[in-house]
Structures are given as structure tokens and as C-alpha cells.
Image 1 (cartoon, rainbow, N blue to C red):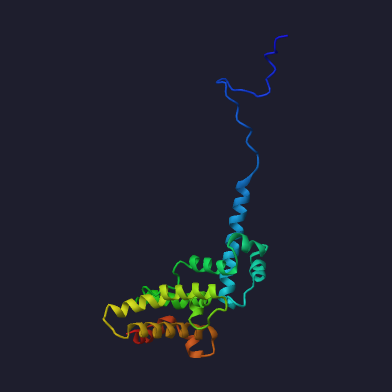
Image 2 (image 1 turned 30 degrees about the horizontal axis):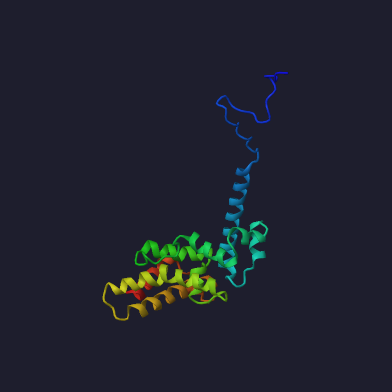
Length: 207
């Protein structure tokens, strides 16, 4: 009996005689990817806030997860661990604490205002309080040199100052100390001073 032309064989073929492509799965990966990106961003934001408020060592993965509203186990999945998340926070800051333009009044005032408003970031903190985690310490110290000490060191090197490296670290420590003291509020005159009033005094130190 001849085959029924309406009945396809075991392998359906297209007009060119090749096998038809397999059906495409109807899953929806895009929303999942968007959810993952949003969770990652929330973890990054929460970690940055907590590291600034409490420091790296006193911030736990659970703390970060609770503030972000994300399962803390996702820190390992998205970043690899708390230390890697800390490094991601440093990268996300995008030179917000850079001293590259420290001798510019507007830039210096902006640095004071940012620390007054948001608190000291991980890079500022490491100048006065080392981290227990070696990976976090190394990452923060590297950023401290790249963003703050390095630009000051280059400034003095251009003037052939033999003590340029020491002066760079001294001035970085002075700036960080002023910023943290304002934040603490114990020195009331310093804490209440307008950044614009501090600029001439800080410039005297810098010069």
C-alpha cells in the first residue's frame, strides 16, 4: 500500500529535504536576568552603606542581605564572597574619593560635603583602621594609594621635593583626620564649620 502523503514520516523534513529545526524552548530567561541584576545592585548598594557605617569587619553577610532584601547566600553566587563584594564596592565608587584635584576649591569642598553626608567610605577608613581580612585590607590600601596618596605624591614629585612621599602621606592623614573628626562631632567647632570656611585653612596645610 503506498504511503499516505498526508502522513509525515518519522522525521519531518522541510522542502529542501533537511530536518526541520527542533522547537525552541518557551522559557523566559530575560525576567530572571533582570531580577538577578536588580538583586546584585541591591547587594552592592547595601554593602556600600554598611561598610561606610560599620566598617568591613563589623558588617556580616547577613547584615547586607537583610538591608538589601536579598538572601545573603547570593553574595557568594554573584560576587564570590564578602571580600570580593567589598572590592566591587570600591570599584563602584569610581574615584569618588580621589585627590587628583585636591588643590581645586570646588573639588575639596565636594569631598568634605560627601563625607559629611554619606560618611567615610572604605578607602577613607583604611587610612586610620586596618581591616582584619587580608583581601579587604590589600584592596582598600591599593585604592588609598591610587586615589589619595598617589596624586599627592606626584604633586610633590613635580616640585622635586625630597620629602614628597612623606608629605603626601602626612597630608592624606590630615585630611582623613579632619573629615572623620567632623563626622564624629566631638570637636564641636570643627564639626559645625562650613566647608567653605575650612578651605583656606586646609590649603595652608597643603602648601
